[in-house]
Length: 98
Image (cartoon, rainbow, N blue to C red; front, side, top):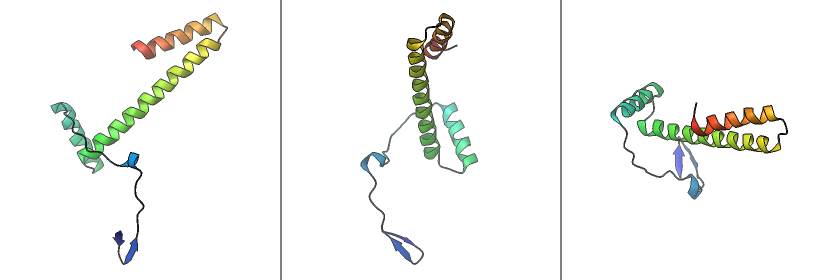
């Protein structure tokens, strides 16, 4: 139960997948300095900033994978040689970098 002023409310239990888990990470001195600076700017804890950065990175990775799969689908469906070469180039950049 949580009390807010004079009002009481009962919070439902969180799904087990939404439960926060404690995880220890080692950061280089430079990265730790940047995280602390970002935490000060955001007025948040360094732990919260690290969690947000990890979530953002995972979302970016998922978006990149989705983009790759879309391009692969376009490549298999394309009949135009020029478009196929262009798509192959994009896939190569996604796979190996610029």
